[in-house]
Length: 228
Image (cartoon, rainbow, N blue to C red; front, side, top):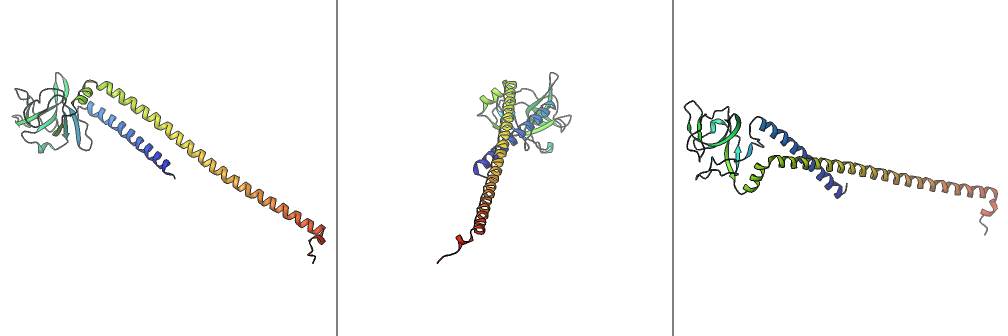
């Protein structure tokens, strides 16, 4: 197998794996959004901060459109001062909230508050609604994060179209590769059959010449006697 073919197969395989991974992420992400949960990949999730509730002076305060890196960790590991993500309800809609733990709640669990809020959150964070703890943030991608947050449907449509194009392109490439391999195989078989046919014709011609010579010897033996 030549290098060009190996590279082609490798690229095709990687493209198919990326496509399947993307499809899987889309399904998992849709299920996560439906359940009002972060989408975790290898124990980490990324969330765009949509509001000003976490603007503050602390090193881990968050501006609008910062990207928070969320780690899926145990509820028992939560400490006072951690910035955590939890499920909450706002005007009858289930949402994910990222706020700071400020102390224990009287009803159990933890009490939380946004760095930019004057009052603490009403409901406690319990093991049931806790989703993860912030482990870092990305601030230099705000323009991209803003575009993603405000044009989510458009981006989803573009990604869907890209995936469709990838599927069509890779399918055509696979068909072309299979066709090329089949043509190469047929050509090799044809060349082999042609060489076999040539060898057979040579053998037949040799046998005919040999037979003619033998017949001449029988009919005119004197012509083949060594005269000295």
